[in-house]
Image (cartoon, rainbow, N blue to C red; front, side, top):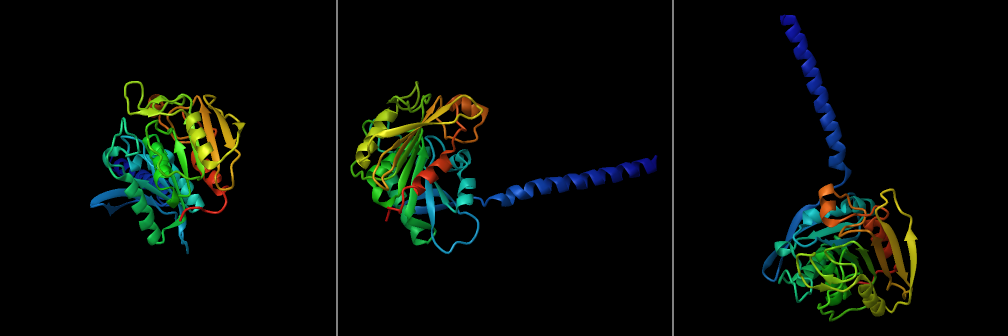
Length: 316
């Protein structure tokens, strides 16, 4: 009896040791696969503003290109970081990823009717770029702005107010607000992603926020593209379809405009797509809320390819 107990204890010890080894082995690659973002802050007009920053692993002898990614309304920097999956892409391409935090979870994106924040977020963006540029972390001539929903409208607002310090914008699930002023627009690369089944920022234009909310009025995807077509001095668009993937729920049409050098414009229409970030890993519950996400394209890769094709950096 005693021998049986001892033998059983030895077996359990072996199993426990093996289990610990397996747990450590499976945890280690995830821990070292990609460097993690860190929390940081700076003072803007007497107020502490927070952001997360991801720097690609390895040693760099010069400042790197950077993406500033704005989260959606009522969301957070951490959620945008995880949902977009941009860190993995940034690590592979030597890009700095910056995730600012909106006060109260919202951005002051230029809307008059339906404005959800009164923060001076333009001052925040300017201070962020200048600070990280002064530290030698980011190349100030290669700072790109993107965002989802309220964050996508914020990207448009940055392009309308301080275009001289950015190199291009990517707009995801968002459109130009009907009543937002665009005081100092200038030609710059613009790429837009919009789903035709988006109920929060309707593809055809209308109330922002869904059927039971009213946070202002958005222009249609076509009108938003037309605005930047005129601003960038572009000609007509060439339409092409991206081959569908296995999900069968979406079809992607890409409108590429004939534009002057470094003033590119691309409108990516996700037919059947919801209020989503193309290529994102999306839970079933999130899909039920926001609608289908396409995996026929990856917004992260498509933005970077588009911006790199524009030629020499333009920001200062």
